[in-house]
Image 1 (cartoon, rainbow, N blue to C red):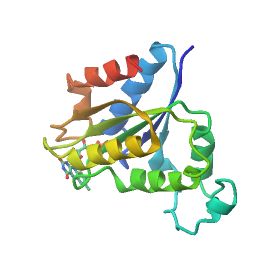
Image 2: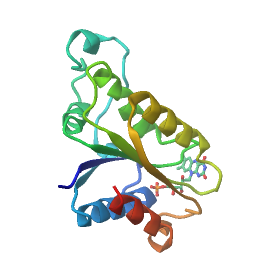
Image 3: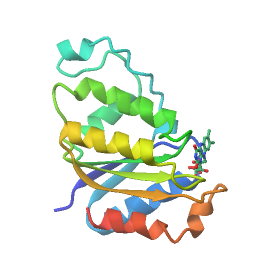
Length: 177
Ligand SMILES: Cc1cc2nc3c(=O)[nH]c(=O)nc-3n(C[C@H](O)[C@H](O)[C@H](O)COP(=O)(O)O)c2cc1C
């Protein structure tokens, strides 16, 4: 039986390079027999974690009633989570980071997720270290198996990803989950 895979896609730019990576990943994961879908974080109204610790006293329920509720509900049946993001100032996008911060509400009750992957794209090479470190440390802390990271640089224009031979690496990662 296939796995349930959820891609949190973090580019503010609709139809850009990260969206192209996300679509390729979801398609390949589905072709490999998985139940895969993407949530485009830009379409969601998600406020930052307030660190109020309401969740700690309320079985992991977050006090903030916004679109993160549905994302967290989706995560309760997700096996593999995938973070897709453009590099913004040597890091994942702020929108995606805000959503990840909200995972905090689930931290004490625990996650259904057992593994994770990351898809990153950028203009320049050698700009992925910060995001990769965050991913490794997060997986280590949460005891999620690392399915892999794909990094694709050289994305100088919107849609350049369409012509990138590296898109194949995204499909390979998806097919091997
Ligand atoms: C605000 C902003 C910050 C960026 N910072 C970096 C950076 O630090 N390093 C880099 O190589 N590219 C950087 N880029 C380029 C994007 O990562 C790259 O063009 C990416 O493919 C855009 O993805 P998208 O089409 O999904 O928006 C930045 C772009 C923007 C808009």
